[in-house]
Image 1 (tube, rainbow, N blue to C red):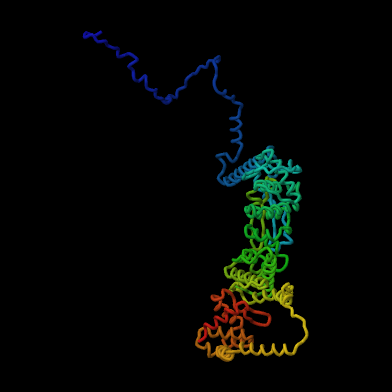
Image 2 (image 1 turned 90 degrees about the vertical axis):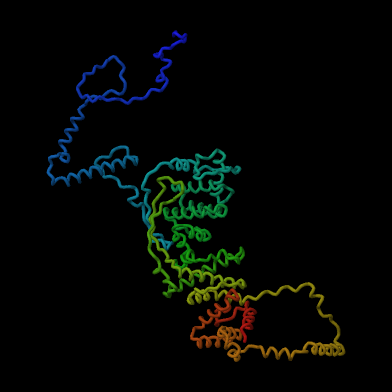
Amino acid sequence: MSKKGFNTFDLNDDFWDIDEMLPKKKVGAVFSSDTDTVEIQVNSQGERKGAPIPKNDGWRERLSEMRRSDPASTASAPPSDRLERAKAALKTAEAKHLSFAAAAYGDKEEKKNEPIELSPSDEPLFSYSPKRNPLIENVTVRLWPAKYSFYEQFRNNAVKYFDREGKECQHEPFFSFTPQYVQMTRRQLEFYFYFRSKIRRGEAIKADYSYILLLVYEIINVPDLLPPENGLDILVFLWESYRKEFPKLDRHLSEWICDYCLIHKLDGRYIPYSLTGEAARSCSLKEFYVGLDAIDGSPYATALFSYASLYNYRNSKFINNENRELFDTHIKASFIYAFTKAENEHLTVFAPIGKVAMTPLKVTRDAFVGALCAYNVKRRIEVSYLSVSRSAELRYAVTDAIKFAENNVRAMLGIRSRFHTPNLALPLRHAIEEYFAPYKKELKKEHPKEAPAPEYDVLYEPISHELSLSDAKHIEEHSWVTTELLTEGLEEYELEEAETAVTPEKLTEVYENDGDGEVAKALICLINNDKQGFVELSHNMGILPDALCEAVNDRLYDTLGDIAVEHSDDGFTIVVDYMEEIDQWLKTRKK
């Protein structure tokens, strides 16, 4: 205690040592710079930590021996041998790299004194030229270059379940981006077997998109169990049955069926046109499907019809279930007839026509892209084919040819509306008219059947009685009175008509100062059935009759929205449906 009575404390007490309360700082290892030799004693009875130091079995001596015996590593070698030593070292490195690659492909045992095998894709499996498709010149099929095993289990399950018959059961929902057997529950697997059994018998039932994909994957992966011809039939049936419900099938199956046919040498003759037409638009190798339809006529014309047009006639508002077959049959047939004729006559319609206009191309396809496919089924395909030149001018000509063909089909059906086709060359126009001429003659020969007389006509039948001269005289007197009443003012009406009637002799006086005078003269000639006058008028103008017809149609297109003059078997004629509109137009153009 201090003198003042306060307790004092010891400054050396640990309680007041702040440094003890702080965490200790980590100090790095300090290595000694002393390099002197030090003798270390190890307690043999103590516990040793870590792996024991291996004994020297002479490997250092053997390595030194190899270096001394290797001329490439000898420092005293002459400089002239450096190039040879570098080549030898490069060959040694390549051999080691190839042997390592062979081990990565699964060759566990090292093969000595044997030639190194090439990559699976270096040698083709087979090569052939399709007989039915004139646009595909050659197909070469190779193995897939890189091995993989992550889909082997799927193929094993596909082989295991291939013969499993399904029993009728309720629909079980299932969804997967890449459907596989191992992802399915017992009920989903049972419904899949039932769905597959129905499809194999040609019956389509309600199923989810994943079930359809799984069946497609199965067909692709088991060509050794399912004959490719039968597999193609099932793929086509799936595509045709479910494409409206699942539009994505057009994009996937158009590519996969193309690969399936090329790999298994199938020409796809059983693929209906309703599918090949859409597939030609979505598949990257359009020529495969286009060439399948080139049975008659030019394959070039078929290719142009399939994907060189800017107009799709199938979207026409005049097509229905009753006349769809008529449109499909005659539009395509007339188009191919016209272009095949132009090709045979070596004509040039805005661009060369025929095989001379095709460009030989070569493409390499990876089979079944996006599909679940095992390594031993996947292939690489090289296709040499002919591609059609598609210039802008040719596209316009093709479009107008299809529209003009549709105009003729509409005329056969009695539809008044027509397309304007200014880009259609005269040879193609005449060829399409030549195709439709026999059908138009058949329509003229057919007379409508007389409708049965209505029942109330019986009430208007004359009453039979004896002839009376007095009654006949009375009827005649009344008839003359009626005649006088009906003919009052008839002379004035005939005079007006005579003054306003348009005759060929008065054409010059009526229309000589009007800019549309020549068009009006041509129309009057056709209205009066003066076809020779129409031809002479074109000669006086210094143009052909076809050009005068085009000029008349161009002038009246804004008024009618359609053509006014068409080419018939015996010359040019007015479209009867627009006679009233043409007459009104002529009256507005008078002086």
